[in-house]
Length: 280
Image (cartoon, rainbow, N blue to C red; front, top):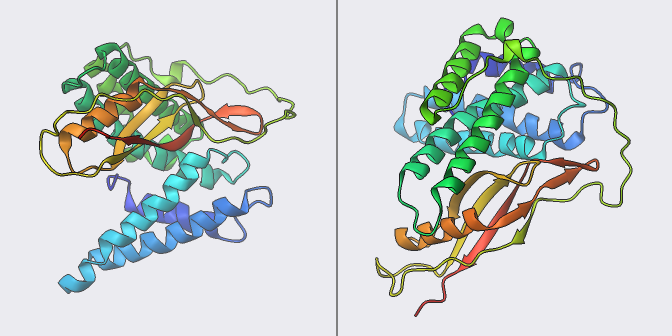
């Protein structure tokens, strides 16, 4: 994700957290996340070019802090009421994260996943690519090609390349502008709900453990799209045993989910799914 243009990011962040730039209806939590992100990013830049190894060693934690704050904004999904600059940053970072995700998921698809059908892995890659396509198309409609032509060209080449790699047909978004969004009445019993597991599939863990000692609890972080389909899955709390981790990841891929709800509409959401290896 460090391919994100430093100059572009700094300019966008500086404009976003300025009190004059903030709109009153942009959520307070989003602006707080952006404020911390700006501080962390500035510190990361400073430490990255520091003269001593000790100072340069502080760069990584600052970058992790920046990513954490940006991930919180991306996962929250409620950015439409913020400034245009805020939205540009949101979709720019999201597209950068999409690019990293595509590389990891495609490698997962190419690997052997016992018990997981190739169609499921193919659907996961396809859903992630759809998200990537939509994020870059949104950037285009917001004028990102004029504001940051080099970064926009990089995103477009990358998306087009993934369509070629996966055997799908790429249609440039310039020819398919998104349809106008109609106003929707926001009244329902459950306005805001997190994404959740509908049916958790218990994986078949290796017995005995193939690599010896390891933790019995494994956490898999999954991202659920508005349709309820997975767009990402990764082991975030490892057992320190590759075979066990892969079994838990397979269980997460085979499980089913319900999307998050925000303002009564289905939205993208992230959750942690825990699996327990009870093999003796």
